[in-house]
Image (cartoon, rainbow, N blue to C red; front, side):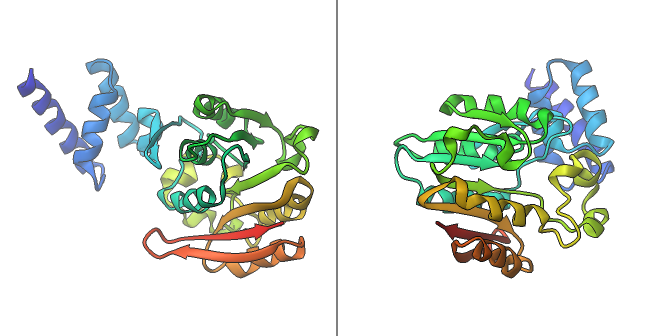
Length: 261
């Protein structure tokens, strides 16, 4: 049996390498582990060779030590966004109200809740119903509630003025730069999760403008951005009346702007 598995994995590695997969060995193990049988494995391999993101093919992504459920048509949480989670966790007290806005599959909210020993009141909101189908599963272990709609319009009125930690990995790629993204993102993730408008910051400005009405006194808004765009993201938060600072990680190539009510 072990010899059979070794042969299967070796064949997968060969096919993946031929398709240009850099981490063919690791991917072969994941595909093999996700397959129900040989026919299913052949189907998974064909999808991956055709260019579909590995996470969509196997049905999950590793994020902050969690196995986050994802699937076709959903935005895959990036490793650099783990830096945003770390910043949010440092600001999250026991019992805090945490809101994951533009939540996608709910990875950020789930990760913050998982790393908050005292527990949190978790909410997640997004405009994409397909992503929210995954978000419901990902936040369920933490008692999270999911809301569908455009930014703050999705939220129940009782959350107004109560949010202690608001995390947002909103789209921030300028429209004209979408075509420069890797095909895995460009062709397989929803445009609404990538396109940030002419300068990439349309959604950031909307989030910043609405935040003061929803944040609790002393509450925090954390937005992932790029090093190049950070001054403009920070300006949007400042214009909303928040006290602002920016932090970054060279290791993860990550930048987060934090505004405090």
